[in-house]
Structure formats: structure tokens, C-alpha cells
Length: 99
Image (tube, rainbow, N blue to C red; front, side, top):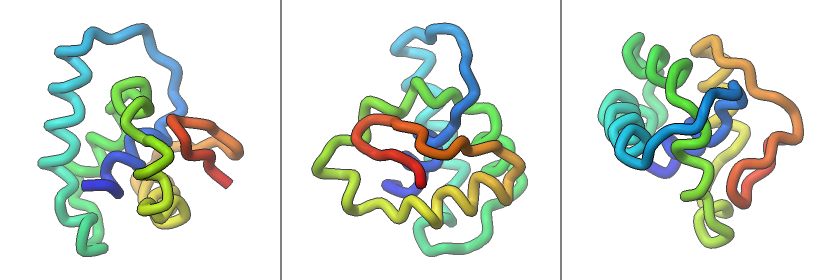
């Protein structure tokens, strides 16, 4: 679940402001779609699709200083890139910054 949150946080596509309810729904769909990532299994096509379309604003606030050390940012970036999502260098989301 932590990895999925990171994957969402690394989404650098700028989109309009989203309602809290819409963000909650987006997070739930992504988490359910990408559960296999917890065991480092390859993402499913649906997981990749969700990684490409879920707005980063919906997740950034959950990456706290306590959660950040538990996240393998490099793995999350490789999954995102493998799914066709651009991940900018030095992108700050919550308390995590991409390399």
C-alpha cells in the first residue's frame, strides 16, 4: 500500500484542483488495482492505466516524514516509468523528493 501511495505521489502531471471525495475515490481505485506491487509482482495493465491517470494532488499530502523512510522511491519510479508515466527529477511530493 505504501508503494502505491508513492507511485501516486510521483505523478507530476498538473491537473485542476480535485474535490476531496474525488481524490478519495481515485486513491481507492489505484490501491485496489495495484495491490500486486506490494510483493513486487509486475503491475497489471489496469494498474498501469491507473498509475498514468491518477492525479498526484490526490496523494501528496499522505507522504509524511514518518512514512517517507518506508518507501523505496527508486522502485516506485521504475514502476511508474515502466507504465509509461513521466517522473520528473527532484519532484517534491509530501516529504518525499524524487532523485
